[in-house]
Structures are given as structure tokens and as C-alpha cells.
Length: 132
Image (cartoon, rainbow, N blue to C red; front, side, top):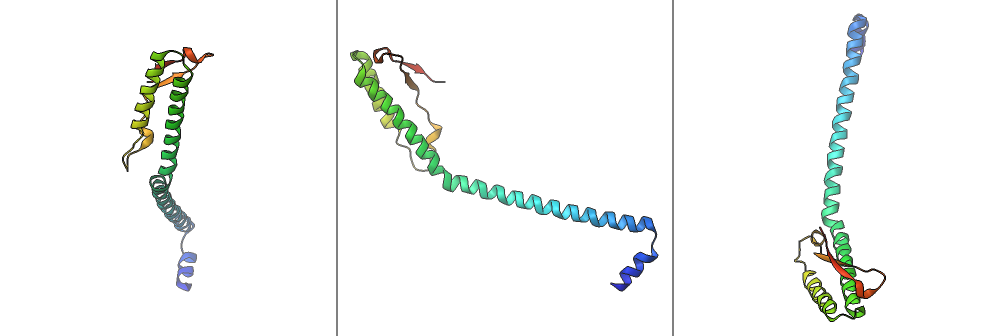
């Protein structure tokens, strides 16, 4: 340590400034590398958390959406006076119940129903519309 101090005392001001700048630059590079490594590790942990832990929440939300759709179809079938509309609503209800069976490992929220029902002020005027 004593030899290092004597070397710096004997050197010129420009070499002292260059050595100090190099030390600060080295510190910045090391801190940047540590930061990038920490961000990459955090990204891996977030991806793992999503695929392992939050997929159940997403599937539960999809099931809730499906049951709401089935409830609308059932309500339309019960409230309408037109036999044709009732038959169509019951067919869509049967189709919605069959399409909810998702094989393990498949994302349930990737499928959407092909039609949905809009109700106006009277239940008899409900008509299915296409979803894009």
C-alpha cells in the first residue's frame, strides 16, 4: 500500500485524473452488469410465477365468463315467448356447456364464444349478434 501511495504522489496530475476516471468507469461497468443480471433474474422469476401460479386465476376467470354466458342463454330461453328463439337459445346453451371442457394444459381464456346475446327493454326482442 505504501508503494502504491508513493507511485501516485510521484505521478503527474493528468495520470492521477486518468486513474481516478478509470476507477469510476470500472465501478460503473460493474454496477451496470450487476443491475442487468438482477433484472434478468427478476424477469425469469416473474415468468415462472405467471406460468405456475397465476394460470389458475386466469382459468377461473374464463370459467366465470363461460357461466355468465350460459346464464344469459338460459335466461333468454326462459323469458322468451317465441319457440324459435327459445330453441336457438337452448342449442347455444348446450353448445356453450360442451365447449367448456378444456383439456389439461390448454389455456381456457384463448377461446371465446362465437355469439352473445344483447337484451333490450323486452326479453322477447333479444337477438344474437356476431362477435369479431
